[in-house]
Image (cartoon, rainbow, N blue to C red; front, side, top):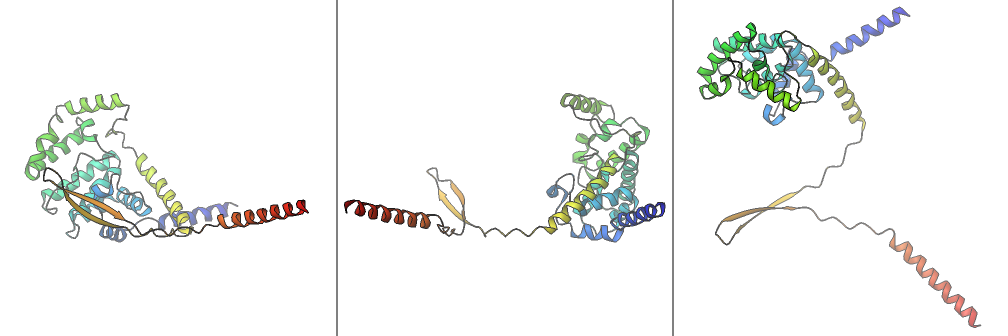
Length: 280
């Protein structure tokens, strides 16, 4: 019995390992990613492939840094890596951001990532504000500030105003307390709860996609065409209207009226017959 259990564990362990994304698969995923982070929304994607990529970054963030270093990625793909890195535990996240700073300072990465670099977009939103006084985070803030002054001077003041003084943390705590929102993760906690949720979500997404694949495909909707109509109002302003032109629906065959008509005719015939019999 023990041998069967051990073999089962090895077998399912092999399957779980086989489902993990490799470095080459991560590159292919980024190449095929058509939408920007903004278009895709935050968090960035919930399909099994999206979640597999997030797990890849969580487990291999140093390899993710090497992807940033390659010149083959466009800005959209680099932004996606930086946003996905927010799934990392706090201490790994700080190391990852320091790694990105290294790439920018050495000019291996020619420009700063666009997507709220360093300040978090969803999981790590408010992380720097909340942990500003921890030595490791304070050192990272100094590096980020120097880079923002060079690469994004127009955002420098708004991003770093009140951050070092602790005013940003006070405002954050006040706002989140007012609305009952949870506080950001502390640097010391270094929680892996997000990673565990990703793994669970990936399994659920795979199961749901397999379930959906078994269902018959839905018929494609009828094509729709839009006609543009320009009119001029009484003030001489041009107004543009869009009218959807849909193909006319064929009237459904009336399968109920005909049988009812036949029944009515039969009944009227019976009544006429009964009247004639009474007269006789």
